[in-house]
Structures are given as structure tokens and as C-alpha cells.
Amino acid sequence: MGDAMLVFAGCLNREAPYMQGARGKGIAVFAFDDATGRGEILSQTDDIDNPCYLSLAPDGATLFATSEVFNRKEGIAAAYALDRAAGTLTYRNMQPTLGSITAQNVVTADGRFLLVVNYAMGAGGPDQSLVVLPIGADGSLGPAVASVAHKGSGPNADRQERPHAHCVRQIGDVLLVADLGLDQIIAYRLAADGGLARLGETRLAPGAGPRHIAATADGASVFVVNELSSTVQSFRHGGAGALRPVSNCPALPDGVTDSHCAAIHLSPDARHLYVSNRGHDSIAIFAVDPITAELSVRGHVPSGGLTPRSFALTPSGRHVLVANQNSDEIVVFRRDADTGALQETGARLKVGTPMVIKVIAR
Image 1 (cartoon, rainbow, N blue to C red):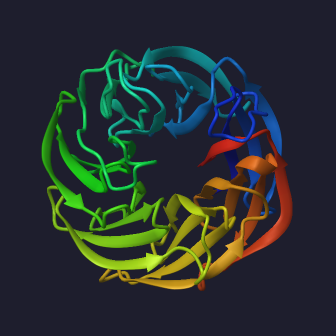
Image 2: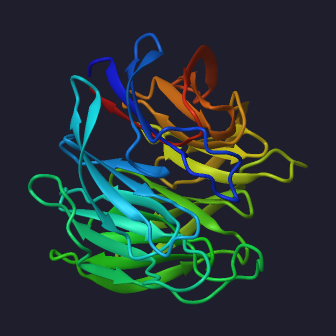
Image 3: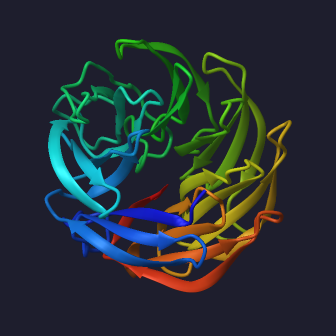
């Protein structure tokens, strides 16, 4: 594996009442050297509003971005052609996401569909929770071929007044959707034509607020970060979306409050799990038992800035890049593969209000 990487940062460029400023320009692309931990900006694309989540086609030729714009009944998903050599993006097209406050997206493993979840605020509009958009041969997006709407609420009146789908994760032909508003992981079967069939749900502790999901490559172990309770749970996946609880760990040190979890990622060897804490402004480190999926807390490291909403590991696992949303920079950490420990390198990539980052080999 070579050391040349591309880092994509989706940045807030339209104000939202629940964010602290919008100082970004859209999507920024950086060159990153995984040997030295240094990077430099290559391009910025400013023809999209609030690209708060990004994903890449399996062939690396297309970048997909979803827009989270306050007070709109629908977000949009946009497709961009990627020139890997130049590190530039060229707009292809966009499609509505059939719901408001579009939170996350992922390309299916076969590259045929873009899966989108809508957090949703208020009422009105199509109000769909999970949406399936087809991807054409040229990488462009087609209108939605399937969608489902969640129903219900949770005990936290401020944050769980309605469904809030926050993440979708594919495991074979099964989709797991974390719904922060319902305290549920809802499983669907994805058909070859993009159709959706509900399989069931896993109920979490009332008020947990599941936000994002990580999973091992074989899908046998699943990990959920809960935003509202600041906990991390591990499960064994028995197939068809059936999750058996294994462990439930705090993501914060004892006595820490007024903090909310955000992103969750496994190391490439699946021996360590990382979670970001906004408020405590830290990365929590967990060891993962490869057989049982049991989690053990290994410590916390300061994120190097304010509000670490997103982070990413390089494909080698050598570095962890942390996007500190309210510090306008991405902080580079060196990772110890044996212990999972993180250490700041001193390298920082300057960019306005980074909301999400993705890293691929160049």
C-alpha cells in the first residue's frame, strides 16, 4: 500500500441555529502523506450547501455528498466525479433525499445504490427516514427507488420527540439503521432492485440515543455509539439483523458531563475502537476482543481542538485525523498499532468548520 492519500472534508458553509458558525467553503480536498503525517490542500468545491456527510464509490471515481440545511423539508444528495491525480471534484448531478436534515450516507458494497438517512426536524414534506438512490453507470444519482418512514418517540423530550434516523450500515444484504429518536437499531433487507423489507429491531436503553454504527468486515461484530448517554455498545450479529448485546461501556471518564458522542471507527485490524466526544473534546480508545467483541476502555486523548464531530483512520491505520468542527482544523495523530494509543504529530490541516472527513489511497 502506498503512502499517498486523499483527505476529503465536508464543511459547513450555511448557518444553522444548532451549530456554532459556518466558516467552510464546501468540500475541501487535501493531499496527505501517510509516511510523514503531513498534508496540503489541493482544491475546494463551493457549489454545495453544508456537505455534512461524504462517501465514495468502491472504484474511487465518484464522491457523494449529502447536504444538511436547516428549515428545508428535503436535503439533497450530490454526485461528483473525482480526479484522483489532481485531487479535484467535478459536479455530476443531485437528487432530493425525501427528508429533512440529511444526516449520513453510504454507498452499497456493489456500488449500485446510495443509502441515505434523514435525521428530520419538525413535520411536513416526504419525511422519509431511510432512502435508496440508484447510482448510474456514469456515477450520477437517479430518483429514489425505495424509502421507509420510522414512527414513534423516546423519553428525552428535547431530542427524542420524533424519529431521528442518524446512520445506516450495510452488512451483506442487511441494513442496520441507528435511530437516535427511538433508541433502536432497525434492520432491513435490501433487495437486488433496491427494495426494503423490515426485519426487526434491537431496542437500546431508554434515552441512549444511538448515533453511529461500526462493524467488522465480516459483519459478525457490531458497535454502536450512543450520543445522549455517552456510551458505546458491542453486539454479536447472528444474521438477519439480530443483534446480541455483549458489552456497554462509558465513552467518558468518571464524573464528566455535558458532552455528547459523535463518530465511531474500528482500526483496520479490528483490535481497537475509537469514539469522539464533543464537549469533553476527546477521543476514547477501546480494546476489542476479536472473538467475543467485548470492549475494554483503554483511555482518552484530547482531540487537539473543539468539538471533534468526525475523524478517520488512514487505510494503514498509521494515522488518525480528527476534524475539530469549532477549531477550523484537522489534527493529525500517530497511532500505535499494538496498544491503540494516539499521539499528536503537530501536523494540522486548516479548513473552516469541518463536519466530516474521509480518507482514501491516492
